[in-house]
Image (cartoon, rainbow, N blue to C red; front, side, top):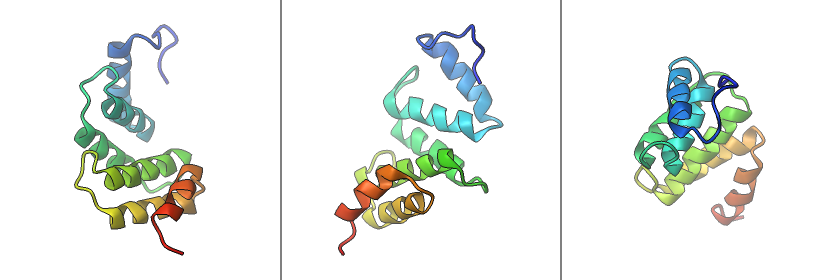
Length: 115
C-alpha cells in the first residue's frame, strides 16, 4: 500500500510507488497497468498496459484482481488496444473472467458469442 503521506493527486509519486510494488506484487502491476492505459502520471501506452496485465494474469492464484485483469486483457483484444485485435482471444479471456465471477465480462460476452 502507498504510504499515507502520498496524496492521490501526486501522480509522479504514485507511479513511483506502483512501479516499486510491481517488482514484487500483482497489485502494483495491476495499478501500474491502469496508469499506462489511462495515461495517469505517465504517457498513455496501451501496449505497455497490455504487457503488465498479462503479467498479472500469469500468476497462479486467481483472485478478484486477476479476474479483473483477465477482463481487461479480453477488452484489449476486443478493441485492439495495445495488441492486435482478435475477437476469438477476447472471447477466451472474457470467458475466463466470467468463470471467476467478473460481472463486466458477463455483460459483454452475450454480444460476442451467439446463443
